[in-house]
Length: 79
Image (cartoon, rainbow, N blue to C red; front, side, top):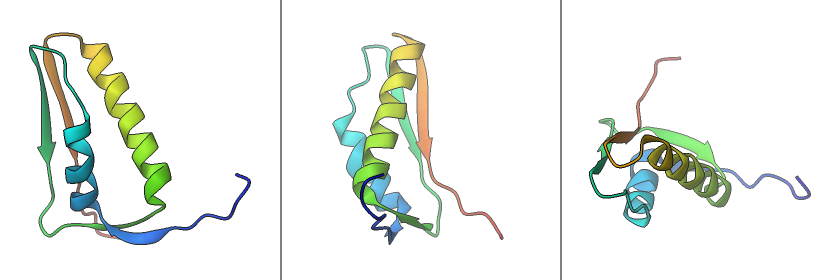
């Protein structure tokens, strides 16, 4: 990285909900979200996290072809 990380605490559910509409699954493929309740908070630099999640989701949709399901979810884990 050429610049310092600018992470902030983000509602992970809202983050996912804003990104999912940008994805276009192929015909026959399902894109499902499973969001934790209560919504987890995550430290992230949104622009970098957006690129990473969109890339991973596009790769998954491409890999499963026209039949299958890609699930994008959030969860809360005890520390």
